[in-house]
Length: 306
Length: 191
Image 1 (cartoon, each protein chain N blue to C red):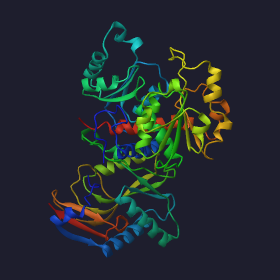
Image 2: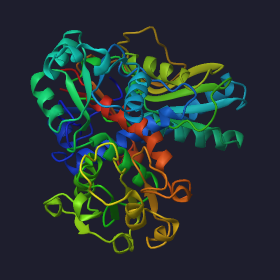
Image 3: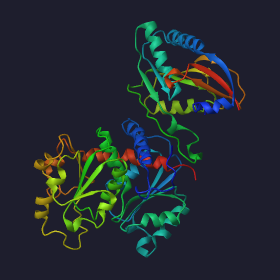
């Protein structure tokens, strides 16, 4: 049993067994991250390049830490301080990085499909760390890991994904992965933020949050991407918060013991009330902690000799 | 690596199989090793066992039970997966499946007896020692194996040996254990 692929670009082509293998592999690394010496020599001599064309603290730091804990060498590369400002194309930048013997390239890019295009052009393994509105596979995998760690079985699990589904790569990756594992996924948000054809991915579409939350075991909040909304998708933030914000009252509509997730960074008081974000049902910081273990697992599985 | 043993029964039907230890032999060897561990370390003070996955873990549990029978004390036991410390990771196309390391006690200043089923090239033990030292600084590391088949590629020697079994490089040794759903026995397979 192994992950037979050069790149991790999307969760759509992965099988349920592939996903389970990644989660089980992450278990081993969770143990490593709990040690006093949080480092193993598995990727000694390998080079991991973080190529981030969008601002990111969590994901980039998480990948960097994951690679370092595997003893790989890490290079962080951001476009503002590089030849990209001189007009170099993505592929040319990547080929130059590859010429320096990079084994794995972790790419975050504002355009959907950028990781796929890059993977076709280079021999190094490519891991998609978010491409436009398309997918963010490692975020979904760490979400799954966190759900599993809470002892919730995927088969028959009811999950509500709440907010700006249309612009969320996290939502898309999670819908693919959760459906494969037998969970029932509900997406809920204002009609302006619901992408056309989302039901074809196997998700139930809701426009009323209270209705969608009834009986779910997992509430997955999405970030309202205030910096990305060029057009007005809702009248006011206050109205959005009233209709789609997760309050302590609304959490009570879900199953007792339901968990609240958020990929971060959170907009307190907009999509999530502060008392919910800080409550016992919130696993937001577990998600961050598990992110390192899950990414170690992915880097390990992708690091086979070429 | 000696830890990787074929267990597919179809595989050994086609091959010649020679029985070298049966269940009584294994039981007596384990009892003797338990006594030797206690004799060498003058009892169970600071003693802990760590089995190397998977065969070594089963044998470590057996040794813990025998030590309990003799001294009336249950010594701490841990399980070590050495995959991340292997020296051939960078050479493999597909990475081996990981199993979890679980050493639920502080190994610092303890006498650690590493337990494995077969000692062959010594590379697994090198990896295990590196893995162990990442968890703390033991006072001493000793090594107990059920079978020593020779052909060392590293300067490594077992402290306790169940049985020395001279083999040729082409042969395979299988340690089959009840815990893995087999009748206890050790066999040599000729390809």
